[in-house]
Amino acid sequence: MRTALHLVAALTLALATTALAQTTITFWSHTHPPMVDLNEALVAEFMAANPDIRVEYQVIPNNLFFEQMIVALSTGTGPDVINMGNVQLTSDYIPRGLVVPIDLEASGYESLEQLRSEYVPAGLDGATVDGVVYGRPSEFNTDMLMIYVPDLVAAGYPEDWAPATWDELGEVAGNLSRFDEAGNQTHRGFDLVYLHAGWYANQLQVFASQTGCRFYNEEGTESIINSPECAEAIRIWADMIYEYGAADPRLTAGESTVPLQDYISGTVSMTFVQPWGMELVREGDPERWANTKLVPVPQVDPENPINRVSGYYWAVNANSNVQPEAWRFIDFLASHPGRWLIDVNFLQATADMDELAEAEDFPYADQWLTTLEAGQFTEVYPHANETNEAVRAALESIFLANADIEQTLETLKVSLDRVLQ
Figure 1: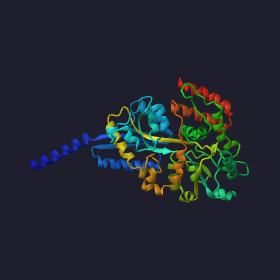
Figure 2 (figure 1 turned 30 degrees about the vertical axis):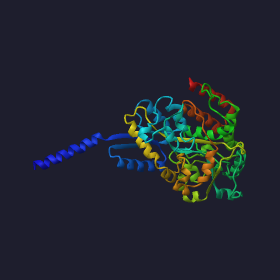
Figure 3 (figure 1 turned 180 degrees about the horizontal axis):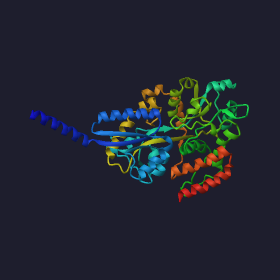
Figure 4 (figure 1 turned 120 degrees about the horizontal axis):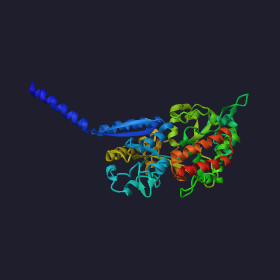
């Protein structure tokens, strides 16, 4: 009896010791249902393969994500592993020492050159400052124009119509819009997402990349948002509202979990989409996806196309006490590019992504790769969250109140110069 009790006591002690010895990694991401589902699956698989490590995964609502993450890391209360956009990462997190360079040994690489060889040439650029790499890409994004074909046909346009310029888009989108007897718009031919500041700034960059607009000068010492190039970029967007009657931000659903809800619900005929957005439409309304086509976004200069490129990267908190384990976990997340491609529609910029077996079933694979070839990373600017919030406020005054673009940009310049102080 005593022997049995001793065995039970010893087993209990062993289990308690094992539990106490278990390392805990905390991991935060923004809300995107397909991504969250795969994250949860990979977390479970990682813990099964690494019983000495526990991963606590938390999802932050999109409209709170950027502010909550930067505050948490700045106050030493943030997670061990973050998933962050390249602009925020290179403009705020890296300069402020909030994240650490990649631990190559813990990630399973002998050299930085070996790691780089696994990605397309620009794959790690969104997490690189002064030649030092701080993150692994979780998604690599660019934009295409998503069109619901039945709306085109009903308005008398051929199924294969695609706009080369923004004016062509505006003219057709205006004809696809619908209004009630009182002149109130009930359907939008083309519109974008009016959500949080990051969405406003990122979508503006689609136009800005083509017009040559920059928020700040190359030295990062002064805002040049009041330039003719930035006025032109904003006017392209504003014209969709006021010139062509295609868009109306007052009608947006503002759904942070499903930001493409307006297109899915059928209240918008055309909008921008990134690779991950295809899955949202397919899950939201299979019939609508079956009648959707994707074409390149219009251009200011169709002979010399420019497409915006952006990305999200996994990185490790500089205050983390489990940095080697955190990098092991990130390497595990990054080692399933085929699943990210099919389950979430995330391009991870791997050098062999076009050779993945899953690529054969990836919608518009060739078109996405062609679009990426003409891609440019968005401008890296300081204090991204503050900058984006100021840009959002200015854009809303233009889009909602038809404020004068040039005058608004002069005021915005003052705000952005203050951000630099």
